[in-house]
Length: 88
Image 1 (cartoon, rainbow, N blue to C red):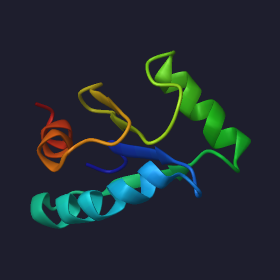
Image 2 (image 1 turned 180 degrees about the vertical axis):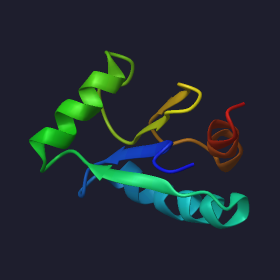
Image 3 (image 1 turned 90 degrees about the vertical axis):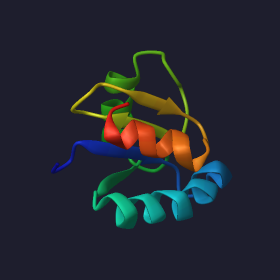
Image 4 (image 1 turned 60 degrees about the horizontal axis):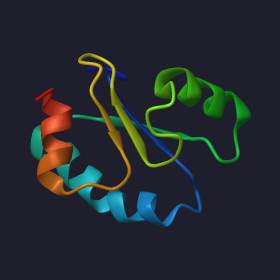
């Protein structure tokens, strides 16, 4: 599952900080790795996110499952995050 699960975030993003413990819990529980990509201070990463976003979200946190194409826009509950990671 190398680089299949992506999380785009901003260093100062409050909602991104709220999601961090949920992502870490999910990584341990499901034995997966979410690649974190900072976009507020990195123009290259921001362009990468925009290419995947295509007007879907327009902000962070933004999660993309590269295997299934499923996306999450914004902060969500733990069950929603798990379903996304599992492709459900």
